[in-house]
Length: 287
Image (tube, rainbow, N blue to C red):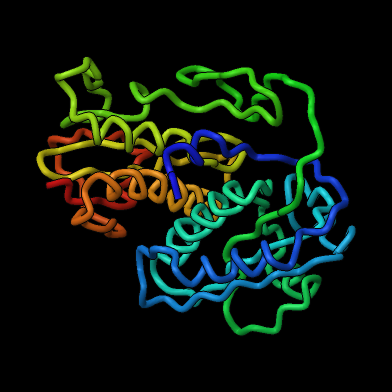
């Protein structure tokens, strides 16, 4: 899979044709699920597929209870352990990219009522429903700009066909040594592989397009910082963290096959000068 291209091509669609996803494509997604990279391989995961649900998820999942009546829903089920949601988001983002490769659209949905969602989808597993994806073939949409966020500062908006989501610029996303200290992305002065990986990370989906996280490099380590956000639930933020970690790592490890994996958690040093509303969500040893 050409992850860089797929990350750029992927769009979050919320309008689906009532067209069945072929069994062969679904089998390919299920096969790929078993091959996905994990942050925490020791956490048990399952993939549940449910078709023909119609309006069965309305009011219990989705954006404001709107589940977009997708022809197919995918649910990543997980053991509930430390880092389980970040791990599920990491895997789910890979599934989204695989669907993109297959020419199939998808979007994340909020699990407003986890237990009711499992009942509606006929899930009997004792694992928790961690991530929910609406899946299908996209219905054509007008080219338009759309912002879920309240403050459009520091976001880049591109007009293209389909559902439009703003994405944070690399300059606003990434700091060096201390919070708020922007890096110079001048060619020949910045690691080109890190540049590519951060660009991929900036394109990751996040709920309501809030992208409250930031990246900070201090010495040999890259830290992912989780910012408090009253518009997004803690669970949705953790899934979004997993998604941006996936985009970064898929690209970074492609150029550095021996790249370390993300570690959940970590401590900030005083020199990093983190604002009170930020915490270290994960870190990765760059070299």
